[in-house]
Length: 291
Image (cartoon, rainbow, N blue to C red; front, side, top):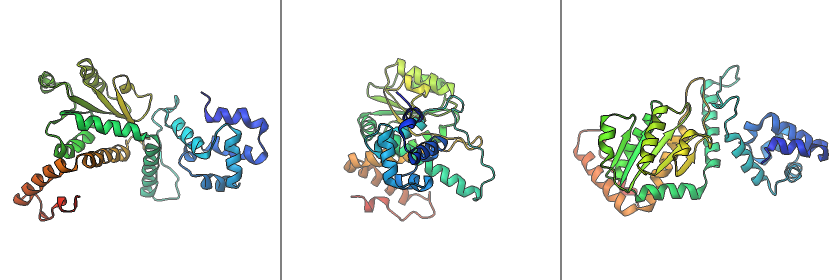
């Protein structure tokens, strides 16, 4: 399938001058354009939205939304010259915190565009049906699995976290039921330990649900389902807001699908908190506003 850049090049001989200007702007700012709406693109190029719409038709799309969806899918694929999409902030007119917040916001927008509602719903349904959930994260994603486990344990009795293949890991393998699923978080540089854990579980016929950054991710060869949250490195730092937001979305959707049972489990937790001395502020009951 032709990329958007190739479609623009092929259509260029038949484009008007204004449409050529749009095509040049898109090719030169393709990652930025993927996160813009029609009015923003038209304003930046100096054309009307009607001209932009005609341009989209001219390169083979039925609507701007179709064009935008295809563009976002394209920019999520790793570039062979820069698979980590590394950013080195320098020379900005804005404060550092503003640059970084905007980058995180853009990654959230990319992730939102990449997730298919049906895939998300199937992912959550699989978690709901499981009686044993294994969360896998390697050296650089272990904190995501620990965070997910803290909250998921409110909903499910059997939740475990695996960071490496050790005696504890192999000792538990024989205890896994036929209703076990594994959620594997794998991001560049894709730790080998995570891939080996996934391979071990895969060979035991444990369904692998992958959360990763790209459809080219090596974890996908083991996964029966996947959800994609694109990534860009800042210097050497790996932003995680989109992965954590996806975790939040899964937790809330699980609650919505099983409100009665989960609310009862949360009530037991809240009663323990009230009777404990764990928090300074312990008199607020989070279950009171739940419907």
